[in-house]
Image: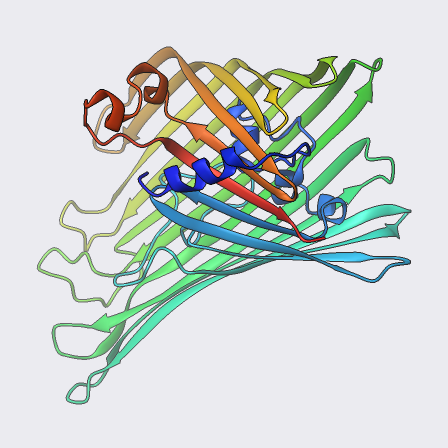
Length: 417
């Protein structure tokens, strides 16, 4: 991205010694947020927000400044922390571990970037002496058009509520969290006679995620981290407008679509510090991901009454990730990471009017990451760097042109103290 060069040049000129972690840092170290301790953890384990007060965090990527958060600290003897985040993230996405597809029904005319606010709250010694954390996310968008010359109007609305609860023991040796997401929408318009009718409605819209990790220090250099994630989500839609002779919006079950997703993973990671200025991380585990979509049509549908379903099951056995963070100068760190998912996928298609088809595929999905961290005093800038910077050099030096981005994403943290 063109503007990031100015930010990075300014950061390189400035020197510092402290390092804070961000979403970009854990990504460039092999996408290892689950086994690293850093402020990026608060999105997985809300109780960790208590350990990261007085911060301003900015996330940049995709040619935009897409998220800003401030961690506010209150009190001194028994302090508590609240973090407020505003972003341009897509509305209605599932909580926690991963983005979803084919999830997400969006009514006509609504923006997909209406995440209103994310709030995090953390306080120590609350439940059995544990640090407690809470997250609330709220997304909503709507519009309403009143047709003065008709019997009805247009109304479109979508909402999504995200609740997270986290516990961390006072020693910081383990974390647990539970995330619950609920949503829905309104979809009203006009039928052929100009009457206001319901055109579609939700038939299930929820996500549940549970996470756990445990740190065990083996010796001053080695720490082992066991972790697990469990996710369940569903979406459903009742479409009222599939009449064989044109939509009449009179029946509630012309097409019923139901999506379900079940996911879990379990893994074992490690943090290794061979020197005081070097951190090496690794993780290995297995994952299971099943997505199922069911269609049911009524006699009003042009194809007639019937049903069909599609199921895709991914077994990742195993997945691997490695990465390291090492300082080059007092003001600069270098980071590299890689992931390898060994995937076996089975896709099944079946209906009452067609033969069942099963397709099996196996492949390895590998990713590599390169990044740098720059520090000066309270300012920390983390980058995910385009390798073309080293392979081709700066365009104004080589004359190659091409307009490639210098960085894929940038995170900026400023310590408010």
